[in-house]
Length: 267
Image (cartoon, rainbow, N blue to C red; front, side):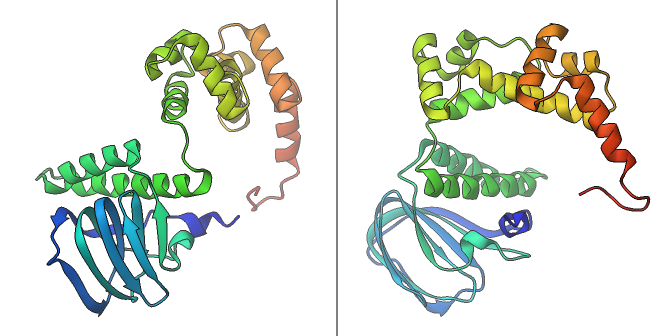
C-alpha cells in the first residue's frame, strides 16, 4: 500500500461552521474552491455534484472535491461543515462520496473540541484544529472501513498504549472502560481475537524490538523500558512473538547491518 496516498498532514481547514439551517438555506450552483466535508447532525439535506446527487440524513456526511460543481438545499437541518485544502492528493477523497458516521460518540466529541478551539483566540489554536481535523477524517474512514470499533475497545487499547511500560492489570483496564473485569476481558477478546494480556505483551515486545534494533539497548534495559519486570519472562514472551530470543535478535540485526553497503540506507 502506498502510504503517501493516505497522508493528510498537508490538510488546512479554511472555514468551519456548526449551524442550524432553515428551509431558506441553500448553496448556489458553483464550483468549489476547496474541499467541502459536511456532517448532517440532524434533519435532511440534498447535495448535487458533478458525479452524483446525495440525499443525506442525520448520521451521514458528504465530501465534495475541490473544483466540483456543488448545489445544496434542505428542509431543515443541523450540520457541521469543513472547507479545507490539501497540498497533495488524498486517496479517500479522490471523488465525491457519502459516508455513514451514525452520530458516532467519538466524532461528536471531536466536533465539540474543534468548535471550541476554532472559536477561541489561543495563539496555537490552528495547530490543535489541524490535529483534530485529521482525527475527524481518520475516525470517519475507520467507520467506513469496519463499521466502527467498539468505543470500549478503543478506550482499552488507548489505555494500554499509554501505560504499557507500567504495571497494568485487566481490572485497571476494565475500570478505565467502565466495565466489569470479566465482561471486559471477554469483550476485548471477542473484538480483537486476543486477551488483554496478549495485546499488552505484543505492545511491549514491539517496543523492545525497536530498542534492541535501533536504540542500542542491552537485553535487560530493553526489558525494563518495555514494561517487563522479570527478564526471564521477557525472554520467553519475546521469543514467542519475535520467533527468536532477544540475544539472537541482536545478533541477527548486527549481521544485517554488516552487509548493508556503505553509502546506502537499509529499506
